[in-house]
Image 1 (tube, one colour):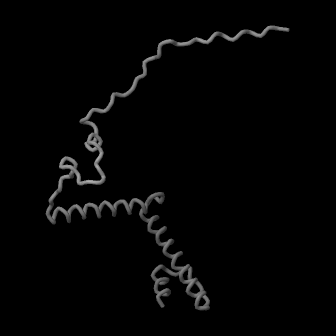
Image 2 (cartoon, one colour):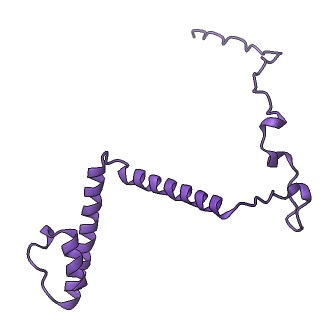
Image 3 (tube, one colour):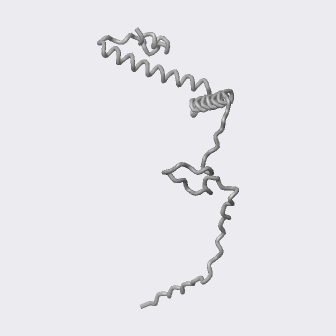
Length: 135
């Protein structure tokens, strides 16, 4: 019988190669709350655990609320445009969505009343559909 070649002996490394690790974060780079001991949930917070109370006047509050509202409006507008590309396409898509919703509501209303839907209903504008739904 032919002899099979013997496998090479295993080489065992006796010293480990140095592992490069990032330096641990320094205290000035960490968040302050991570350096403090955990709060006791059952009692009153110590003086060093209390957050500073910021007293601001009404104008500063109003300005902050206005900035928040402006940011929310920008995010809403960006969300409307997402995937559509232009403002015109976004408006058209919103109009189509409203029209489909109104057509569905009118169909339900006419079915409930047992009345046939008017012809050419899908060609009506959103305002006309709203007016028909209110009648």
